[in-house]
View (tube, rainbow, N blue to C red):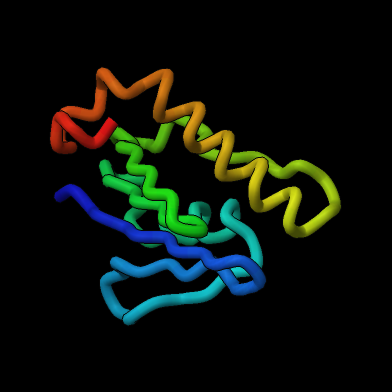
Length: 108
């Protein structure tokens, strides 16, 4: 079974994770926490992860075991940390876009 999660964030608000089996959505203070929760929820099964942050849309596919780190902590500084996390996700997708065969061709 392949999962599909959506993580949304607006400036000043929490990260909202949806696509969970038993809930509408769950809120987190950090992107990393929402990704970790999604990974636990699906037991690291293959998943499409959509991140929408301040109007920017990024999609990434994790294969079985979720072998790729989509973000990492940048230390202190809330706004700065959130934007760095998004840049890391965008960078990872740019480097691996040839693997993302489930997305429309014109997305990138």
